[in-house]
Length: 521
Ligand SMILES: Nc1nc2c(c(=O)[nH]1)N[C@H]1C(S)=C(S)[C@@H](COP(=O)(O)O)O[C@H]1N2
Ligand SMILES: [Mo]
Image 1 (cartoon, rainbow, N blue to C red):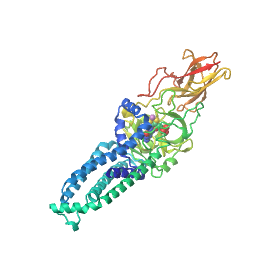
Image 2: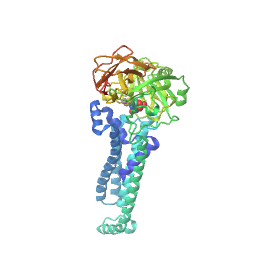
Image 3: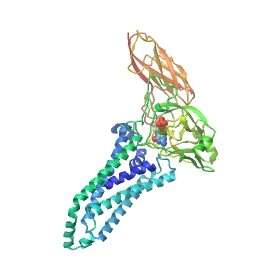
Image 4: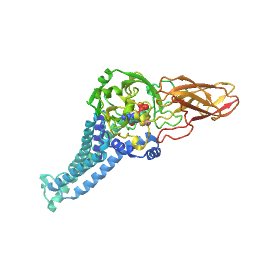
């Protein structure tokens, strides 16, 4: 029962006040500290990020109730064996409260680096305080219910009518007699409250779980790919990656963006303030560092926002600033060099393809940093901190290197494994995308003989240096057979995409996308 109370309290605080769950805090404490290889291996073991998240979400509740139950039983066993007089009751109550206080302090100390997050977007000093208070309330709920159940229900105070606080053997007998008739009622009471607790906890957990979902944590890792990639990805199809079990839901009215640190004056922008500043618009592609060659964790959008530079200049950067650290509502952190922050295409975006940012893409605002992998593009940003020293990012601490985007190119059509019937399609349409961070794409070549000879493709869409290009070519296979088709791009600086295969760890994948197609007569 006490374990359930703890679970229930933490769920209520999560839903009503955005206070992170213990599972979320533990994840943010442990995950960045893992080595990238351990992290990737662990994800594999758990069956991918979605299953891993489901398991931790559910597992955390089971663990809480389990540990709570264990502690409760140990307490009930010890306290129950002591004489039932008022002094010993007070002693046991004091022991329990003391132990709970220690557990609370220990949790705060262990989870300290992860405490400054709030999924409703409370600014960071308040977020940390709220989390600490929330942990206290969790522990408080646990202790209160444990005391209530052990005192009032399992071992009610002897009634004055039955001899008060007697300690003699006769009183002991009378107490037993007095308790016997109510055992059934107590069992019903306990059982009823327990069932109610379970139902309430499960209901709230499901409601919360449902937020993250079209299925189960369904949109983390979402990618939409098909033979006809649209130049601009519709918002609903835009790939999505998040560290969170359940993403923040920040109310624009409560949200503030603060510019702090080594500045002449700290600034605070409300959402309306940001929108009143001179806006910029740019078409920019985002790619996750864990996007494998030929894969789809990469999308393109038309973003609107303000330059980060304008915010930094308004605050007045002090001499010695070398780094700009971005903090987010979910406790996510990443930094970039001051130089990068001052580039005209580094922006704080509040609109995506003409609509407000969808929640899962960082509503109300996110940072966009062309030339870096996705993780540098902090969603739900609420604090920009100018600093002389670098702070390691959430994933950077694991060892990921996200500040250079490998040149990549991809076939979207034909689809690998496709069978082409020569008689019906003598000319095969080839096409796909090519991307090189903020370097642009100058040319794309393709090969139908496994890379022995190359032909130029046509570039049909190239909106900016910071977006992907679409390419197209027509292939007329001469004879039936199986062909190995390859594509390669040259970036805007003239560097050819290397044909050296490397996995995504730790600096993003490299190598050429290759598909096999069969040509039939
Ligand atoms: N606050 C915050 N920002 C974040 C993340 C996150 O978990 N929290 N994930 C990062 C990662 S790993 C990627 S790839 C991109 C994905 O952005 P998207 O979901 O809008 O495509 O967001 C980045 N920004
Ligand atoms: Mo990512």
